[in-house]
Amino acid sequence: MRHLMSPLDLTVEELDKLLDLANDIEKFPEKYAHACDGKRIATLFYEPSTRTRLSFEAAMMNLGGKVLGFSSADSSSAAKGESVSDTIRMVSCYADICAMRHPKEGAPLVASMVSGIPVINAGDGGHQHPTQTLTDLLTIRSLKGRLDHLTIGLCGDLKFGRTVHSLINALVRYTGIRFVLISPEELRVPDYIREDVLRSNGIPFEEVIRLEDALPKLDLLYMTRVQRERFFNEDDYVRMKDFYILDSAKMKLAGPDMLVLHPLPRVNEISTEVDADPRAAYFRQVQYGVYVRMALILTLLEVKV
Ligand code: CP
Image (cartoon, rainbow, N blue to C red; front, side, top):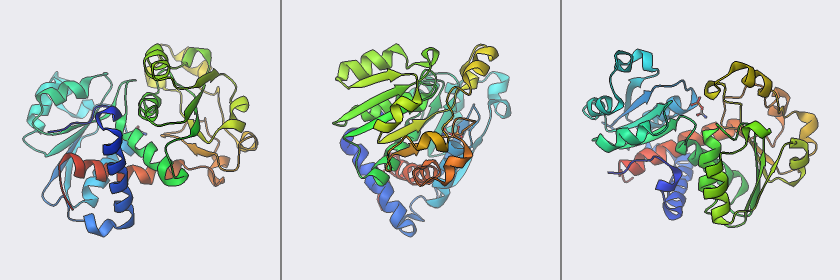
């Protein structure tokens, strides 16, 4: 039985196969409409979510399966003190696979150690968000035609943004990847990402503060929101929250093919006027998230179509 805790749980070959399957699902959805008849996914969300929870549920329904779960810790027996380990033992009796989001880093990993069903990390604290990374990779490969030889700008809260950490981990395995890390001093990537992931893999990167300086050289700009829920102090959040706002004037500094991605939700960091720009790909990215989660469910449940 396999779980997904990090994008590195899949080899590059397995990842390619998964993305190929997602593209096939996009082209021929009817072929997969009954692939998971009789199967159930449990979505165990101890933290708020719109996209990840609903896209897992939509993915399972698109495959003919059913969904159950909870959308907040308060509406589960976690509110009475039940541990994640005990919860997953129960859920293993009710479902065939589960997706878990938790504010504590490592909680889905703890669950996977005692689980009777595959566990998917749907975001753990400020650590990892592997299925957002699968979504991002599918979007980039589908719209850019490749995952190598790209200069990628990551902008915003690079300290707490788990989608950024997972995406860097996944992309360093491809040749010709360069990063421009755009953040205020206080929200730079954690040391372990800079040293153990970027430097130890010999990946070229620069850290800059001004978005305007980075824009002309990027193939892809990955915007992120400032993660209010991870700040210890509201004043610090207020000071940081509007540090970057991508608007039409700034988009003029970017190349004609530079894609803009965002894991969403957005707050103020992308002005709505950018939505109409053909380079804005963040809503297309959401649709890719459903295809790739369908592919992941099929892969972890070992369903052949
Ligand atoms: N991208 C993402 O994880 O969105 P949600 O928090 O809405 O699931």
